[in-house]
Length: 584
Ligand code: ADP
Ligand code: MG
Image 1 (tube, rainbow, N blue to C red):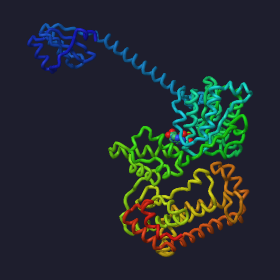
Image 2 (image 1 turned 90 degrees about the vertical axis):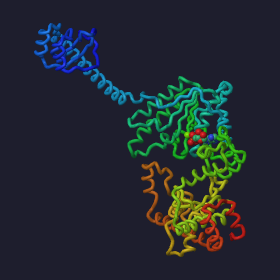
Image 3 (image 1 turned 180 degrees about the horizontal axis):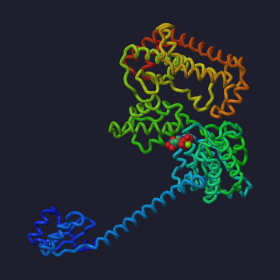
Image 4 (image 1 turned 180 degrees about the vertical axis):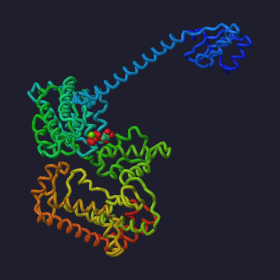
């Protein structure tokens, strides 16, 4: 250690026996001896340096060196080793201290997580400069109009307060998923230039009791700091459900959180520039205390877009995408009945992906068609090779198309295919949903019965063609779909012999209350009546389908032949073949 500074070593290694020889031949000038390290440093007369391992306290080297008058320095081995020892022990001590620190730190982290959980990481996101504008939200004109008022509240509250008007505190956005509720809330913040604080209501609730309430407090504290601002609580139904079921431990925590939220809503002073927006698609299960005046007293419905709205949303989402000049977005708007804004955004995105995959420069109608197929029918799976199976699937699909054409008109059939898709057993008949239903959300008993007939038409076609005993289970999903509709008709809508009573529990997620209510409400007698009704309606519908298909047997065979050859029939071909043959 002490000689290292003036000693650097050559690479060529000499062996122990070499050294002995070289001491004899007088090539070596001096030797530094480190008995404890069991090595020597050798300095040659030509300046070369070498480190050689030796035996502990090697006498031979010492003898040879003295014999040949080689300068020999024995290192103060004790001191060296003791220094080394003390370094080693200092090292050990350091490792020990570091380990202790690490352990302490991780346990204290755990402890603080367990004790200071409420204050721990804030789960809300604050955006000071929101870039979303109302131009980004298309197809929901009514909601947008109502919300524009809020911007004036935020920007120019004095105008209203001078007149003695109280500004709204809470606004509830209600609508199916993906219709742009979050987007609208952001647009308000963006347009009025105020910060946007958002949190998903599920973030309030955690394992520990009390976290939710404390997070609600944190959220409102933060909002007061930033006021004027917008608080956005997404999916508020996850904490805002009707209180009082008492079953299941999680409810207590949820109730505390909700209570805190109610308190905070009452607590912040009128007109202080905080507006709370909340979104849900289950307004029916919200606690009534949330909806009373002074809390979320304004309710804005965000509906699925109609055909005009869909066109606008499609164009908003193709702004940054190069469309071929043949693409007519109005046409695609008619093909996407029932799509939400999010679905439409997804459609344009899928189209762009299809386009890029083919290395095309512009998105064409074919790309959009493929994307639409993928979204509605699922991915293509392996092709069916058995001709027999192809035929059975074709009968099923064509049967549905014919019943739909008879009941809803020839235009209701969008596409028939026997190519297997991941969403179905094999094949698919795409039937355009009723625009009226989509825009109003209302459906008649007659349309529901038609839906059931169409769903059972696959089974009907098989029965007509192969006879009662040769049917397959090909229509398994359609049958379960039909049964679900029938059950809703009987137990929810009052569309049956049972009469206008709602028997099924609306709050199916709300286990506690459902259990109690179901038991007390339905007598055994009523239950069996319900079952009988469900079976009855299903059987009648099947028979009506069988009737339609028997009447159209010639058309059925013709369409099946075409479908087996072409594998896919679009509306054009379907119309051409059935125009003369379809018997209503
Ligand atoms: P929600 O909150 O109602 O479930 P979002 O606002 O989160 O739906 O919508 C998801 C995405 O769908 C948005 O980011 C946007 O790209 C698209 N989108 C939904 N509705 C619209 C709309 N009306 N106009 C334009 N884009 C929309
Ligand atoms: Mg949302």
